[in-house]
Picture 1 (cartoon, rainbow, N blue to C red):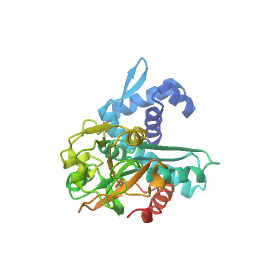
Picture 2 (cartoon, rainbow, N blue to C red):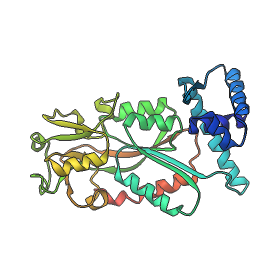
Picture 3 (spheres, helix red, strand yellow):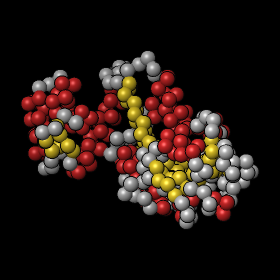
Picture 4 (cartoon, rainbow, N blue to C red):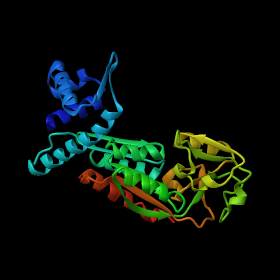
Length: 302
């Protein structure tokens, strides 16, 4: 097994096509196919399934790809540091729960490198997928929350996935609702006040248990609930109906602009926003810069 073969695997996975990968690698398609077959034979696994539409990665291949990405990225960092050159585009990826502050930090990074070549990626998604993305090195950084209820389960999965976490800041829960909501001008909202209003929460797919919820009121029984998959839909519904969701409490002007407001929610919960990364990965310079941008939001939480 060679580093070049690992680069081949990573490129094919990125392109979802052996032909397109061969073009980007400046080698012939037969040569790339043979290199992959040799590697699969050596390892005793099938990494890619060949189909009429291209290739699809197998479950064994997905696991191998995680390690391959790790080694390739480490090699790129060494080349950058000791050869004094940038042979590749600047690459950085983050997977996060639905947090505007993460998007804002990412946007700042993009603006900084706006004149350079780069391949950046940000994905807002389900809690379990965040852990999986960092585990398989699809993303260098993952962002989610932990509290007293879910941290035992989340920490166990983090350990089993060979990940580590760093606490960024602690927040106090707020409700997010329309400025026209009956509770919008309250100084503090209690759980009993929310029972008559629709509760909006993010869909978690196959992992819809309380431990993977993005909202800390997931253990409370709600008369009405609406599951949604993205922030744009959430915000539009909050403006249109007298519903609510639970958020971090960031200043609303920095989150959504006009039309919505945050109100402190009475809770004894301490909610920690944490950042995940792979145990065996050295944090890239871009990941460090992104982390620094995230920490600048610390004073925006109450």
